[in-house]
Image (cartoon, rainbow, N blue to C red; front, side):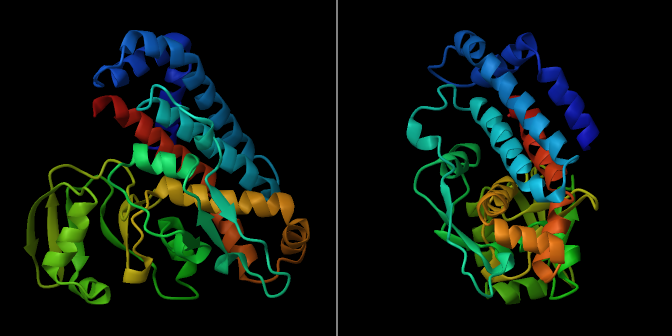
Length: 318
């Protein structure tokens, strides 16, 4: 399932009649929800979220790289809101969930690097609301997360970052496989027994059917393929592979779409309010920040569309 197919599907949804039928199918599985009425009420908002989200992402491909973070971030937030309307008919229930739900620290004037920067997660706002309702089995144990940790969880960044350090993620399966393979040495890096490692995966909702071993791998058979990019499993679109964090300290079971939310939020804030740093970064092309950010922005809009589009395509089937 590539982005061309997803774009075609989203175009199919972008009329009032089809969006109403789609939402009615989503709401029909919910007790105490009048699906016909709420789908009619929400269909216009759903349609506009989709339209605006795609428009922002499409425009981000055409503009200078310095403007991409802002367009990508708002494209993502609109598509997230479309996803939320499929499961939260009353969204937004209060004004407290309208904020971004994330803050960035003030940049230090000297020796600042984006790669070492961090964001703080707030108790209210879109980030926690989406985490709670779109991915109810996921947990966010940290209040602060560094950019280098988030970059390390994006498989498309792994090829790039490994030139300067060890791999952050390791391939464990093909994209639509029902079999995961973990090298035995991975368990050593997590300081976990096989039983404890399996328990950790089960607590994140992994549909495990059976387990086994080969000489080099622990093998997990699944009841069904991993359908959404939910932490700690992440999709590499170009390779069509599923990746898993190599190190225990990088194990943060966040769904990938919210990893991009945090990265793009911080980049968009810096592009707007840290004009001197942002302008100097792109004019001098000095330091690793420039290469890391340029590489990330080269695929961010495509990845956001894939992750949100896949969620919307699979939602009525659940």
